[in-house]
Length: 267
Image 1 (cartoon, one colour):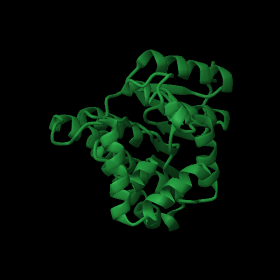
Image 2 (cartoon, one colour):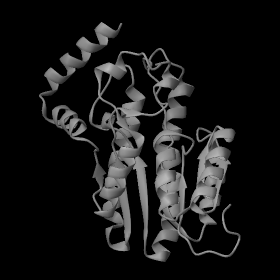
Image 3 (tube, one colour):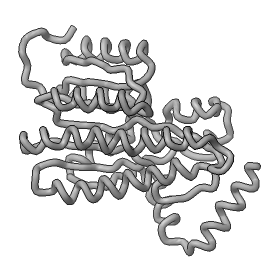
Image 4 (tube, one colour):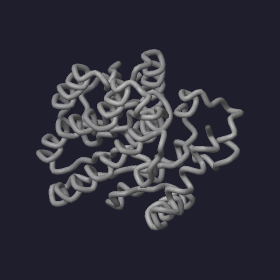
């Protein structure tokens, strides 16, 4: 179990820490000697992961069950962040996919995604920054997606919220450049997590043979390497870099035509 003696280890808070990229960050940071606070919605998985990391690495690991679409629960995490004197890393990783046509979907579902991806990340970052500035060091990682560089006729809010995360993170990085605070926006592509399973895509789904997926562990390894080098935008993997280059520089009319052709095939 983790030591009960007073410690001066740095601490990290990771939202969406139950599995996937969030859990991969938890493993890497625990191995590096960080105490951890994880947030998520699946308490049994959080409890199991915290126990495992505490016993394996001799760090303190705790969790908070929270639904970040609920403003009251986001405020609870804000208050917690302000009480962590050794907070060195905040990872805003919580997120999910919700493919649906905007005009057919319930507006509440669209607003929930905006809350989880953007409002929660903004509020938690704001809560963390003052303490980091006082320490003269710290890091904020906002987990975005290559989707931030693209558009989609059936996942409009997902793409739009990731665009916000990118712009917010880049601007914040410049604002805090001289304060000793590093800011990264991580933009992974297809990654082996339970993200697609939650969308009803099992292991036999064609998407897993059509595209090459990275492991969450590899994504986090690259992210932390970029963070150490103080590189703001992290697009892990050369295939993802090619996709982003294509999306950014192809003539828009051709890009729209390709997306519409794909959307019509999927129907």
